[in-house]
Image (tube, rainbow over all chains, first blue to last red; front, side, top):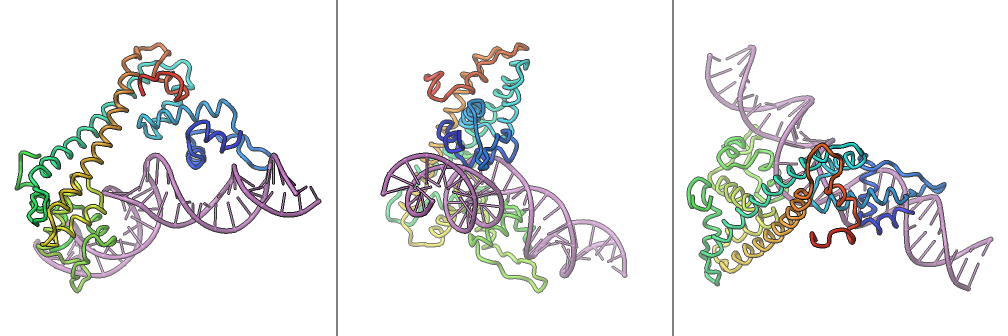
Length: 138
Length: 138
DNA sequence: ATGCACCCTGACATCATGGCAAAGTCAAGG
DNA sequence: CCTTGACTTTGCCATGATGTCAGGGTGCAT
């Protein structure tokens, strides 16, 4: 199948398929005489794996490791689980930071009357030195 | 003050100060005869504003708008609040996506025994077609 | 005047992705 | 057989926010 078909059936854009090939995440497929990349079901399966892992937020490097583990029939599942748990921790970190931002901003927004008058606690707070101002929001 | 001092006192790296200047977020400062950038308290104040906004996750484009509003003494606070609320919504979006990833992954990890045996539901699920497999986790 | 810490510019890297352009290929219909 | 339109190829540029390195100039204290 051509790259367009592989893309449509895997959910990975053509652009990214070529990209993954160039960075070595997937092996270069066979080429037709015309030079067109020719993918088989095995390649497709791998692309779907990549799409799923990417949707879970794994980085390309992590996906590479997961692919290796996937290909290695003798791997210990503990290794995979370790990766997954690490990634969960990273997600929790990100979520926590975003929630902290949200809380601070929500706090500021609540204190801003939001009418046609120019006085605005949001801007006032942004203009403060980080150490001064509202310690509770940090 | 030099860029190093401005950086230390604002929490914005020298690299980013120069960057913000180049993209027009901050005006080019006066230069000494040597060519060194020379910042005053006003510049410092602006840099601190930028640092605070950045810490709340605003993009450079949004920070530009906020700076304009900050400089415009007659602005309506509603405008600022609107920006803030939009940003909160964007944060909620991101948080929601990350939480969905986390939930799915956590689900998978819980089903993986994580020992020395090779069988692993995490890899199995990643290898599935997105439409098949475990609809509950989506 | 010598050395060290600082500053200058410019370029390249990240990470995952999009877009564009010029050129070749394929399949179907006239 | 030839045209047309859809597809593929490669390569380069761009994003956003930031880091790093290199090569060269500056300023100050000893």
